[in-house]
Length: 159
Image (tube, rainbow, N blue to C red; front, side, top):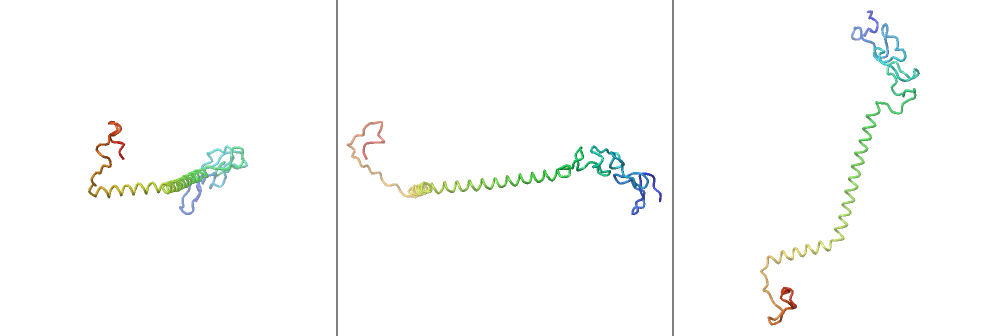
């Protein structure tokens, strides 16, 4: 079957199909001429002729024709790796800070264990004594002894 220009006969579908990007002409056999490239040769290369591909244009090259160190295809990978590394770094920092705090507070509690123990003992002593009947008040001073001042009645000189 004969197809019109800028079409080729597709053997599987048995139809005339548009040319693949980078080709034109009868049966799509002619590659695009510089600076044209891509579908229908309608895009224009902005790099020099030696590196311009009739199919993909200047991809992978800068404007002077030098191979580019990063292409647009690598950008999502670079962003993903940077983001992943940042997240891992934050998790590691969180774990290190948590472990350091736990060690600090454990050491602090051990250093003050005598205080905590005495408070707990005092608390239990007070609690146990509340359950008992109160002991009668015993004065160790005779009623005839005077205090130093009426203002300090509670803190009398009697001991």
